[in-house]
Image (cartoon, rainbow, N blue to C red; front, side):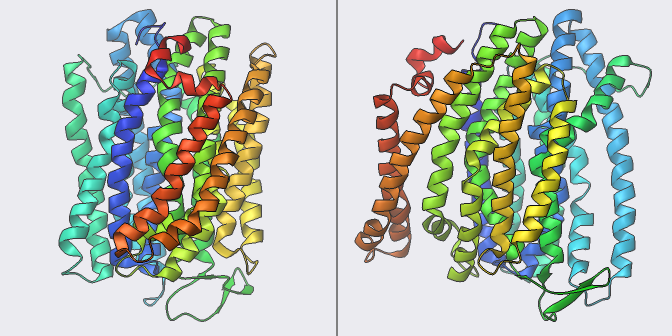
Length: 543
């Protein structure tokens, strides 16, 4: 992309491929729930996959790219391709050394934990699956860096398609092995397929890099100031960009600890404290299913937009074009809210029929649907904030400010932990506490972050335009939500005599389609610029 080009076209390309990857991920989750149900076995697998999956999301969608892309872009434009390739080689070499050492250390800790657990302990399965899948974080972090290089060179399709490889590998295991293996045995084969997928992703992406002339001379020398600066910046970025991800890990840890496993007493102890387990088995699977669904629009829309915007933000910051950075940031933020707010409200209103359509098959019961829908409503409230947060963070990182997001993130992680650990004891909330607390802290995050970012952009951030866009978006989204709410029961009544699949499709897509039409009509009536920016005939105006 040229310096005058719009990031919107790139965002659409990323969104298309991300949509395909999310669809395959949804198929994977549908099969996983049908085979395992919301049981302790699935709880154990989801928690075992949590650590490598967090690294995938953090590095692939956040911290490493946020630090590396501005530095690589600056080197590429100022010093040329040979210097950029040298920076790439040093970055990958150093990252591999750190990740391999970290993986070995964690594997030793997991081994010690495994031997310390009684044979009948519910945690043995969790530890075993975590140990198997942990090395996946090495390959996925390398793929994240290589994907960032392709993005900087204007290639967005292949990086966005990388998760499809993982999803296909897992689907293949679930389809071929679930009928011949027990659920627990199937999870071990599934964990092994994750490692295979990591290797396949490297095999798929490398030819595209070679075709672009990319070279990667590995170099472990430590005296390069650029590498030292990047390593110093990486940790605070991980805290700032990864506040959602740290929240996810802590939520998973608390949920697993406070869940009563199969054939386990209702009372437990922790560090001498006796308590009654507030959560039943399947709680973490309900949370995981709800997270998958709110992350679907988040990944397709907001993260695609933020990923495409970061190189553009970085070019403006490198050139000293504060007005260009301010304008691009405001437009990207308004688009993120324009897309995220109605999506989140639809998840709130249609949570139960959506989960029933996608997951209620095989061993997944209607009770499982009700539990996951309860959690999803809590996350749905915050989708607009999750979307805006990704864009705002890219604004900080384009200015090479990593400390501010870190400080905000650290405080909010503590608040999220406190809210989750408090609310889950309420009988009417239980596992929904994790969705509610995550949404509340994300909303607080964007308010604080915008105020701090404004100070870095000469006390101007086009606040009036952002506020006006937010108000119009809220009006249009509430109108669409009212339509979906009013049509939900009539749609269910009309489709009651249809076969199962057509009935469930009607219960979701009749109110959803009507709401989408109302939202677009309301946006047009309110003369919202965001709607025009998404149309090809207006693309030039956002450049």
